Each structure stands twice: as C-alpha cells, then as structure tokens.
Image 1 (cartoon, rainbow, N blue to C red):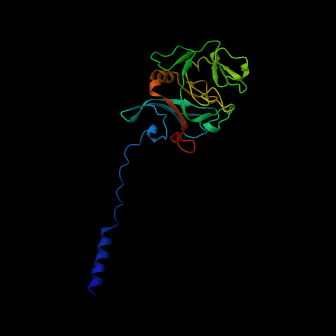
Image 2 (cartoon, rainbow, N blue to C red):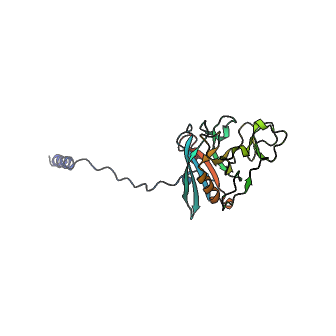
Image 3 (cartoon, rainbow, N blue to C red):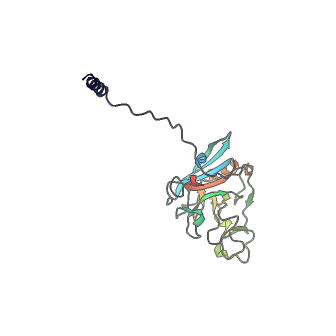
Amino acid sequence: MRTGAVALVSVTLVALAGPLPPPAVADPGPARPLPARMADTGGGSQLVTATAATAGATRGTLTWWDRRGGRWRATGTAPARFGAGGLTEGTTRRQGTRTTPTGLYDLPYAFGTAAPPLGTRTPYRPVRDSSWWCQDNESTAYNRWTDPRPADCRATEAEHLVDYGPSYAHALVIGFNYHRPERGRGAGIFLHVNGEGATAGCVSVPAAAMAALLRWAEPARRPHLAIGTESGATAVTRY
C-alpha cells in the first residue's frame, strides 16, 4: 500500500506541473556566405556568382566577392540577365539553344568597343572593325576571337563584334568551352553590358556594374565566375 501511494503522488505532481518545455535549440548564427558553401571556387581569392531562382529564369543576381583573412565578403551586386532559354547544365549544353551554361569558369580576358575603365588590370582587347568571334563549327577558329575573320569561318556563323557596340562596350570572356573547344556545345559566351532583353546565352549586367567589375578584377587573384541556380540540380553550390 505504501508503494502505491508514493507512485500516485508522483503522477499527480507531474500532471500539475504541465507539459515539459521543448528542448533548447542552438542558435545557428548567420548563414555562411555563398562562396563558403561552394564545392569549388577556382582556387583564387576573387569570385563572381551569377544565380537565378530556377533553371527557367532569365533574370537573377550577379555578386562579386573577395576572400581576405580566410573569409569571403561581398564587394558588389547587380541585377543580371541570362539566356532567353534559361540556364542549363554546362557539360551538356548545345549550341543554338539560347541557354546560359551553368558551371565554374575562368575569365581569360576582357574586350570592348569602348576604352577600358581606368584601373582595369585584366588583359583588354579593343574591338576594331576587323574583329570577329567565330562560331562556325567547321572552322579551325571555332570559339575564338579572330582579327581578321579567317576564310574558313563564315560571316553568317560569326559575330562581328563592332556591330554590338553598346552591349560589348565592356565585356569579359567566360571560359565556357574555350580552352578545349568542343564543336556543337556553344561559342561566344561572355559577361557583358545589358542589351534590350534576355541574352542568347551570355550573362549581362548594367553598364555601371560591368565597369566596376573590370576595375575590381585582379588576374593575380584568379577570379572565376560561377553560374547556377539557388538550389536543385544546377545549384551553384555544386561547383
């Protein structure tokens, strides 16, 4: 009888005390910056990210980052435009799809129909009337700047760079399919000044942002560009 009485008192006390409070949850703190969550940033201390909400989006955000003291910090940001066909996995992209290839790429050099912004350190090629970018799959100059256009690169399969004056006032070559060109994957993918709408596969930003990027980029710090979605199979954090 004494044992039962003690048990009854214990149950009654628990009931009067009410439900137990939920366990404490540790404060996760501020979210890590995007570059810190990426699998690869190119090994340098400068990075540009171009992100869209979904693979079908034609608009997104471009952010440039500096790594100093072991931490990535955003230096600037701008609205970005992508291909009219949205984004697609860079390793399987096909020419003519008007899609922007996702992935991590270097930025070999800059060019423009205008003079380089004061302070530009990236190698810069001025666009002349004889400057072309060959996109002809049959040409030995496929996915290359040519000055002048070679005989085996048809004018109908190349961009006469001077004809894109405002959009190519300042631009950076994106290293997509550039170092070992594979015919049929695509050519002439640049980071350049906005045109009238979505691009044919490039990434574009306002003119002021493009000029700021050229003043910011330092080749010795190995800047790269990562293009992708905020989540999903083409998330920029995969690269």
